[in-house]
Image (cartoon, rainbow over all chains, first blue to last red; front, side):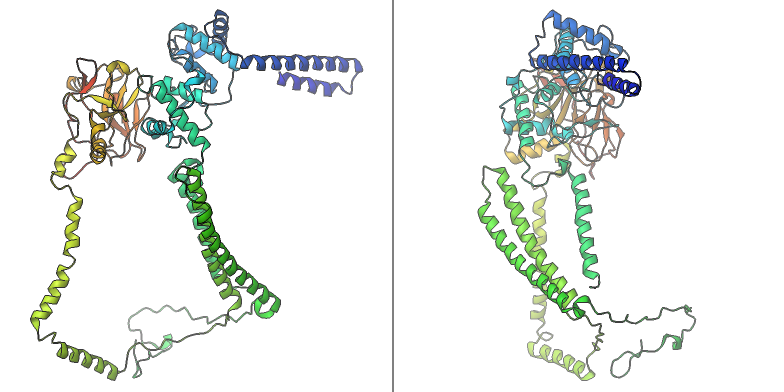
Amino acid sequence: MIFMRKNMSATQASRRNGRRGPLASVALILIGLVATGGAYAAFSSASATAAVDLSSPAVINQGQKLFAANCSTCHGQQAQGTENGPSLIGVGSAAVDFQVGTGRMPMQMSGPQALSKPVQFTDEQTQALAAYVASLAPGPAIPSQSQLENGDVAAGGELFRINCAMCHNVAGAGGALTEGKFAPQLTHVSAVHVYEAMLTGPQNMPVFNDLNLTPEEKKDIISYLSYIESNPSAGGLELSNLGPVSEGLFLWVFGLGAIVALTVWITAKSN
Amino acid sequence: MAKNENGKADIVPAESVVTGTGVVAPDAFTDPGLPPHRPRVTDLDPKAAKRAERVVYTLFYLSIAASVFAVYAYMFFPIEPENVHSVRMNTLYLGLGIAFSLLAIGIAAVHWGKALMADKEAIDHRHPVRGTDETRARAVEIFRESDEESGFSRRTLIRNGLIGALIAFPLPAIALFRGLAPMDVDPNNELKHTMWKKGLRLTRDPQGTPIKASELTIGSAFQVIPEGLVDLPEHEKLDAKAKAAVLLVRLKKEDLHWSSKERESWSYEGIVAYSKICTHVGCPVALYEQQTHHLLCPCHQSQFDISNECAVIFGPAARPLPQLPITVDSEGYLVAMSDFTEPVGPSFWERAN
């Protein structure tokens, strides 16, 4: 819509030195477009916050249409999977909410891993897609808000260090994996997406089902992550928590730089 | 170099030295001498000198202020046991105060030396180190006299006793190093065996709860310790865990490739357990990718392929990770069939291969 509007204003500019009649009609069209766009934006932002009933046939139907238009090229018309994408039967609404809700899907291009990017669908559309995929076969569901808050931070820290820290870094700063893949950083990730990632094991992340890490333990881990994100490190400047690389670079540049500068100053003759 | 009676080195021009067969570079480096003295701004302009003086004493007083600030910071930003943030404030202000107080002294001293102290170039000649012949003779005489008076050469029992005592004195310190090695056990044996044994259940780290085979969905990864490890005393627990830590994963059965039927029997329905201790230098290997089935060691980037008996596919590790043979017991819990069939972790001298 923005694109169209820009096009219109370009047309308007080119016709400014022409007759008056077309100019008026262009202005009229512009007003109409802005009004519809504004009304649509107001409508869609209002509906996005409303809860969506994932089991309602209307929502599932909408999801199926969205799926056919946006996902079926790789995942197949019946979500049965093709050579280019895995089957989504039984992955559950949690997987869809994570993949689409973080912008990883639809995938921009094939590569070592699907990158998170600006989200392509509204919340309502994401929910509809999730509802459709969940209707195909039972699978992990999107967690409720009560499953994400007020866990035991200390217990979560221990579980995080044992199960997550090897890839995601002890402070959740992320880290490299093999052949160009990487474990993303876990700061600025919403609690619900962290929960869904543990539950479904997106891409190369292993699955941590509820029999491995119970919902209570998942809640503890999420509480630990939000704790370290909101509490500054007691050790001072974190330097992105990347460990020896960023710390070493900082010391080489600034520590050695200061020493070199002082040495030059001390040995230079006073003017 | 030749020396005259006074012990001073004869200084002769380089050109007059007889070089024998030595090759003399024709463009021998000649001493350019000192550059002409150049007065500083502070020598010429009393105002500049005054300014430099002001900078120096201001820095010294700032240093005093910073030291006092550090003491105040220590008192007014104390470390509160419940407040992690207080540690940061305490160390930050204390460190800033101490660092600035010392840095200001250094900068002031250097600036003082460079801008205000006399900067006339001068040469201080070294006096000869060798004493006169009389002094040297007297020194030898003193040694002889003290030997005579103490009886060091004469009373040989005393002398030998002293030398022996001085040799024996550091021995206890060396003997104490023995305490660093295991006392009652054969270290070789310790390296070759872990806590795992037949029938021991695989349990979750850190809870120590047993794991049913049905609890592993495809793509699952469990961090595993042997049953009973959590009940050990702290020190023994860490020792045992360092050897017995295991990664338990479930793959599709068709994704696993085995070299023999026997190796295949060490897995259960696509569930495999591998030692987490890297065969390179013993880092914990647990960066598992569930789609590629690669296992990455974060220390030196060794990569192991779980679908292929943990063969090394990249990096410095020399051997595959040892596999723990597993099966299920009558209640459906995963148990070890035996200990690891080879020593876990890095190579050591007595290891067979």
